[in-house]
Length: 150
Image (cartoon, rainbow, N blue to C red; front, side):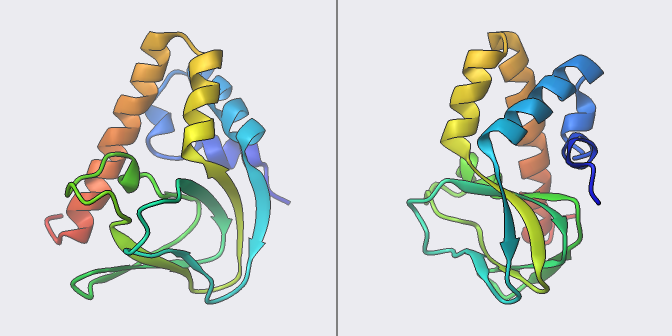
């Protein structure tokens, strides 16, 4: 059995925050997320997608990320997916890669817009800024990794 609060709170970008803020943000993720079983081979994201704002926290299973140049990355749990689209690194407002379930997955699925709206209602503006800054750094590292620059 998974302790989802520890799984979410253990995401690298959340570890930048103090325990109090991290616990409150974990509670927001839990509030806006739906636990989902994802079948093997299911596409989570496509580079053609400019509309959806889904995000996932995968806490069981393996995900494959395939960038447009054919580079693939295997991602193990616990991981956050969908954060790169939040910052539009290349100005195209699309997903940066095709992402699919390499195995069956257990995940939390959420809407980024709902997450941000709930954070704005729950946290002080400076706390939301700390969250967004930590998330931006996390997303930037993923972008550089997909570009082969890490």
